[in-house]
Length: 78
Image 1 (cartoon, rainbow, N blue to C red):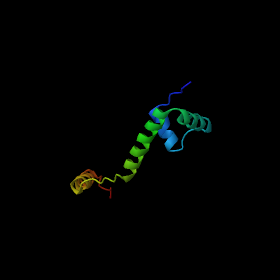
Image 2: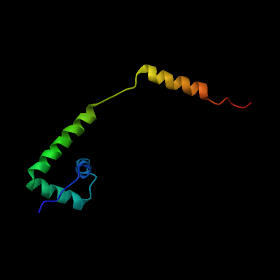
Image 3: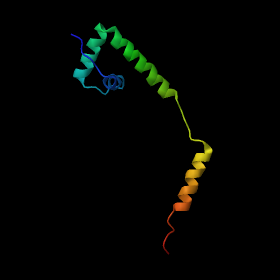
Image 4: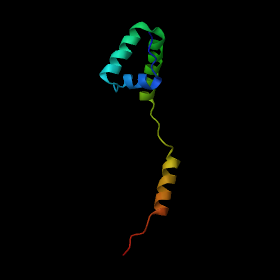
């Protein structure tokens, strides 16, 4: 009997966020189901890619936010 696992469950497994029972079930299924192993490998590659991606906002975006904050700031009451 094959147990189907969702991509979300496999991601939780990758991040070690599954219960011990779910972890054992996934590991048992991985031993028998090559398509599940393939899906897990694709997710592992995606996780590695996400870990390497570093994005920063453009300087103009930061300046726009700072200008907006400055213009909309409430003046202190004296």
